[in-house]
Length: 122
Image (tube, rainbow, N blue to C red):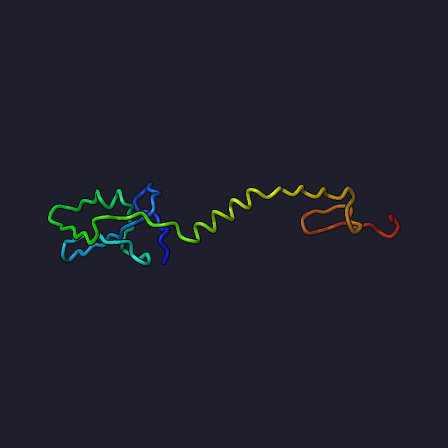
């Protein structure tokens, strides 16, 4: 179960805590706890957007949950953060300098073609 999904409202980066689904035939919007998996035609909402939800005139809102606790960070999030901290703390390796002379007798190169030293030039 991945609880690290984000709110689907444009511009919102808050973690999702509720899932919104629509029943068009019944003119009803169902707002419940965050679904286990992201489904098509459903919307994951943060606590702010879930509490301020409004529907069109003539529609009914069915709220299956009235409080939306913030999800705990998943172990994947914590491991990714720990890896990023470790990577930032590692010293950078200096780039190895390029050899001064061409390796293997190569004189010039153009695209995929190479000019090699002849036996008389060596």
